[in-house]
Amino acid sequence: MSVSHELLDVVDENDSIVAVKTRGEIHARGLMHRAVHILVFNSKGELFLQKRSLSKDEQPGKWDSSAAGHVDSGEDYLECARREIGEELGIDAVQDFEELFKLPASVLTGNEHCMVYRYGFDGPMVLHPEEIDDGLWISPALMDQRVAAGDPELTEAVSLIWQRYRDQCQK
Image 1 (cartoon, one colour):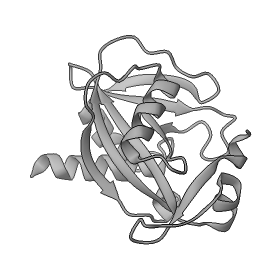
Image 2 (cartoon, rainbow, N blue to C red; image 1 turned 45 degrees about the vertical axis):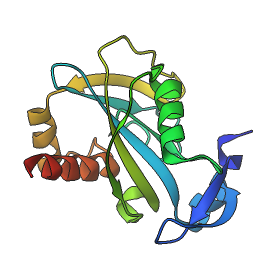
Image 3 (cartoon, rainbow, N blue to C red; image 1 turned 90 degrees about the horizontal axis):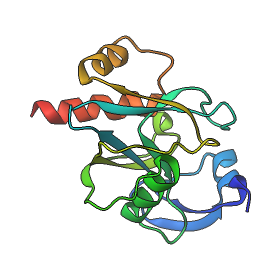
Image 4 (cartoon, rainbow, N blue to C red; image 1 turned 60 degrees about the vertical axis):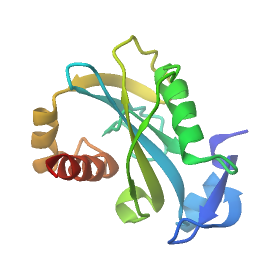
């Protein structure tokens, strides 16, 4: 099944399922749906960023959260996080994900309700070549600088997620 034909749940502003449609139709019509973003940190406290493949239909070549993806119809957020971290980074998620927060659907998130998780990992990764062109570990201080400067090489979603993450860390 092609990516545009994947079945996703259409949701309302309260994240309640209202229909099931193809990814292509959801994106074409700007319907609300679900996604996960995972922030992978190593034991040095560095964040792993992925550079989205130039072949991606949305925001190609931009730096994004460690792993991210749409929640398939009938799947929950945590199941999706486990699947995406495996598919994109080759990580067999044996430890628990830390649920950080949920962002409501908005223009900045691509009309996606986004559940954001944290995952600790030091081992080697196997980057999915059709999804990811490159990856790098970045210090929180450098990520702060890039987000504060409005770095156009970052996706809007990862900038929003990082701001919220840092605000949460300050509390």
